[in-house]
Length: 65
Image (cartoon, rainbow, N blue to C red; front, side):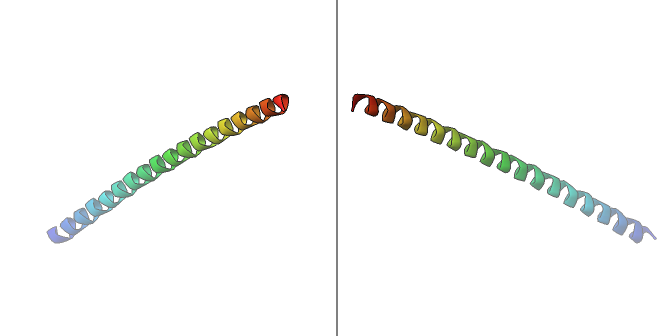
């Protein structure tokens, strides 16, 4: 009888441990996704700035030329 209780308790502890690990992995994945999104946004902003600068340079060249 005691063994069954111990086995059940061990099983519950293992399940809780698995759930906690999955929760941590989900959090890590969420953080990584957020970091990727931030990087992507930063890259897009940089590209937009470069395009604006090129457009300004083209506009100045046309005025001069």
